[in-house]
Image (cartoon, rainbow, N blue to C red; front, side, top):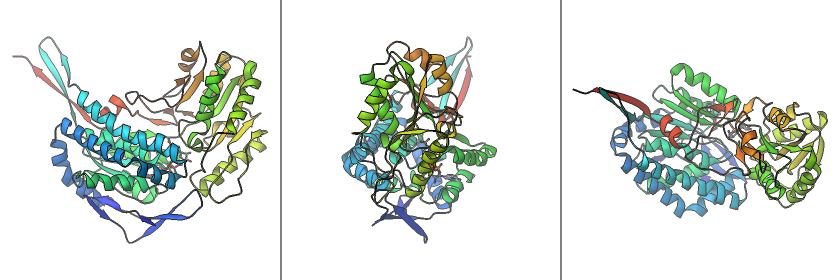
Length: 459
Ligand code: TXE
């Protein structure tokens, strides 16, 4: 039994109350999690670490990010084992997606920090120098679907820019954040630079968001929770980055190369059991290639390995949408059942025949369920893709018209003839109910710093 502890000021501490971390694979108890309700001790520790940390040179902080990447990399199998244990995802997904991309996040921002140039704007009689000062104590709140991957994506640039961090992993998947805390302590990261608090969102999550000395919040999670976070943070004029839900479409045009589109769309549909905000939960297929695409897609689905969803409560939510789909006139082409074994398992489910305006086809399900929709023209496909309140991501599969169609999709990111292919310099984030702000490259640098302009008149 793992006992998860908080990391505060370089020390591992716990609380008098704890609750269980349940395995999605078989509902067994895998860890005990501290039920933290106050961020005060972590804020105190962070405040005392801020002076020294923010005065390091950016090169020194880049070296620290490399050290964190190195220690994660040399423990990558344990990171993957813990992530797989906590989320139920297959070990190779935890290794090749979660763990390796967590290492990459630290590695990337170490390199990116070394390449940063100071910005200068010359006038005829003056020069403007732009400084990027740290914000101070920042709160980072992350979800259960890609636990360390998404948390490291925030920790790395926050530390790079000289901030000190109070991180709160999801109470459903605390293990890899806890392990990262151990590794950072072992390599001698100064106490208070990285603090990790565990507990329920409405308790310690809320406490972090409302703490007056935490000046910026970077949040990834559900849209409904994002509204609560925004309502708390906005009146306090905190910097706020919200990376929320999605209901993304994969558009397969009539000129798509099906040998590329079928595996690509299938992976976008069911990777991580559909529990990635970027997953393509709506598959739009041109009518002329529908039969061929569907027979290839359903055939390939038979060999696509997925794990359970994150827990029984979420499984009930996903199953309720499969029931809703039937009520809305959907036809189950594959899956739809619960396998007879312990754990939060659901068969990958493919549903056709629904209106693209049905609730099933417009609300975020966040599980191994996709709806299939036919279209006749590119314009119709774009209209269907844009008809949800979300606007996070999407993909277009076409030999000739991918970029043209992609540019008309209302989202923050669109892939053409690929999916989840990531250059960490590009903007990452969504529009509409998928969030506010962007992460990645200069967007992360900008969020985790305060730009200050010094204008010097020439004598
Ligand atoms: O998110 P939550 P969850 C979607 C998906 C999923 C839904 C809920 O639809 O079903 O969100 O998932 C903390 N103040 N996505 O439960 O509840 C909470 O403890 C401050 C899309 O993961 O939003 C956790 O650490 N914090 C998403 C984090 O917020 C609060 C990925 C996210 O929890 C809080 C995951 C509060 N009042 C789910 N309440 C994506 N975009 O990738 C909760 N938290």
